Image (cartoon, rainbow over all chains, first blue to last red; front, side, top):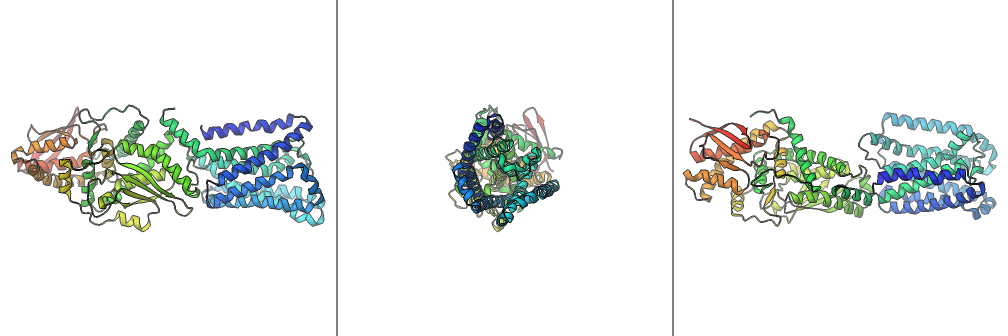
Length: 266
Length: 368
């Protein structure tokens, strides 16, 4: 099995279960997303633990935190917990912060293993540009949210949106390095970049949605579990994270198989 | 001797590595020589490394560096040709030791151990792989090492293999490593042990060994008596020998060719005296002993009947199967000059060479 080819094909194939959401009747789409989101996230969390086991040091920590992030992301999708969230809104804030803390820690350890010194000037320019775009988007969408949130949660809830930008900025070097290395000898991991790409997509999906659809950020959460484009974006991002993790775990085995095939003239 | 072929050495090295890959893929590779085949006594390549080490204190670092560069370039190309994903060893420094050892062993065993076993260079294995973001350390072992088997020396001497193995690991992991030989059969080790990672002080000491002493006459005698016995056999692949020569001279072909020639002259003189005693030949019969010597080592076939002014050689190990390049023959020309000077009891000087079909015609002149 050619792991790189498999990954590329699977990423394309993952569009199917994601885009199907848009064509399902509302009720079925809602059920579909309520099953698929937690299921894919759970698979991703387990795969991430598996990947963590083949590394040590910072990279192991990165995948453990990714696993925790994916696992904690399951909870907002579990329907029977929604009543509890409504009764204890502070629990939602707490859960959101814990979940984001895992993602920030993941990004932190990814950054530690990333050789940022190798990023070109163009790459740094892209990172700075991303930072500016992120801040502009937030500056435009955050004030209405700020008015809407209850006084006690104003700051913690709005800060979470800033964490989105922080996470994207922290993970951007991985994608940029991959793009750079692709032009050279391709030594950057295609699977790892896929995973990071999935995480970035999951982080910015809501912003893509509000920009493309013109929906205010305040109203965007109501599009969850309705068969919306937002659902499709989220599901696709979770699926490519899971696929990336799966191929990453299988990389040694499939890479050795490829060598064997080449030696046998296959 | 002309210098017109200096630039083609990298290409020659790459061609030899390409043959290794073809053999690994079980492709039909025609033998380089019709009578002797592709093997020669392991003493021949040993000598080509030992004598310069003795004569030139810069030789160890030179052969280490050139074999490192050639191995890194060719191992990388080989892995691409074998479809190994370029990111296969991504973040190797963060791999668990078990995974690092397991995967590296599989790649090394399947490819490089196999190549070296086929070439009868020895039996390569990964002994240990320890990973860390600050320092990777990989220990490789070479059992029955062709470079030092049957030799006793006061310092590890396998510079070619240290460079080659370090180059291979550097290519696989996409990082620059240093390597040194921690144990060597020549100094009493069971196997040669190569430590690849951050060489530091050990590397400095290794590459600057001072005077390396070894009992050359005893080595020649043991070789001719067949007392050196490897389970892999007492022969090595001709391509390995050619790589040894190419890597010995590539950093400065003119200088190393000329110094090989000088070393060859001195060695030839001593060898002639030894052969007379060993084969119990009179001085008049010494030419036969010389031919017999080369024949027994499967080094080349020598025709000395035309006298001493023109010597014909066929099946010459240094150049068989390669594009003709006289830079590889400096030592041989010097060695023959030394041998013939003693055999004829006259000062004989090498004057030039020509290729006539498969024959290498070497010309000498008696000096008044």
